[in-house]
Amino acid sequence: MSKIALVTGAGSGIGRAVAQALAAEGYTMALAGRRRPALEETATACPEALVVPTDVCDPAQVENLFAAIKARFGRLDLLFNNAGTSAPARPIEELPLAEWQHVVAVNLTGAFLCIQQAVKMMKAQVPRGGRIINNGSISAHAPRPNSAAYTATKHAITGLTKALALDGRAFDITCGQIDIGNAQTELTQKMKEGVLQPDGSTRPEPVMDVKDVARAVVYMASLPPQANVLSLTVMASKMPFVGRG
Image (cartoon, rainbow, N blue to C red; front, side, top):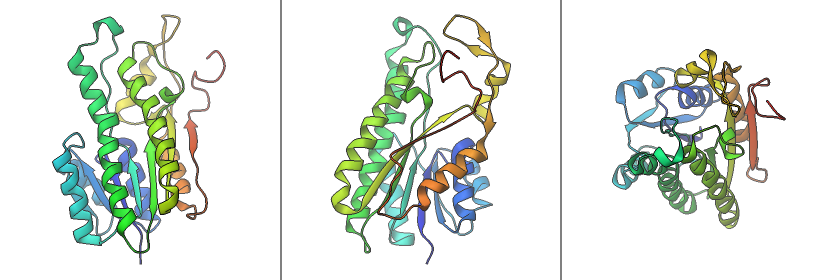
């Protein structure tokens, strides 16, 4: 019997790559995201996938997502909490409250809502337990210039990951975090063109194949319940993160 995995933000980029890699490893997939056509495109490489358009900011939609998973599959073995967004780069004093609130709603509250529903299901199912992997970021360790909202939420994801890693122990629920740097997707095209650096200059940055991220998530998911990767960083090896750039 194949394991059941849910990927949020599965319509493109990292979410699509991870969903398709998990499907190739034999997982049956549930795919969530805001755009049905994009999810259905991902599903072409995920046999028997369940597609549920979902805004993770909306508690009712998240509840509907997990109800659909339970009705279709009866259980959930893996959640990859991947849905995320960012605000335009701007000085913190110029960051509109609405932009801050939107980033917090998607990156942090959305992850919390999905974790909450996943934990409820994982505690009750037989056999009990499961695994949750949160998509953090290099920004969970060090910010980019003018990225207060995104950076704050990714630091918060680290706290949420650790809290669940502790609270899930008694119920055979493991939780880990993958921090990703410069994976090549539609959203990181600007990396090749040049991005703002801490010294005020704008320079291109190296990127890595998004499939390398997918392989890392598959590895984290492959561990037995007795083992957990609490934190894993996968990054373009020459990106400006380690040392002084």
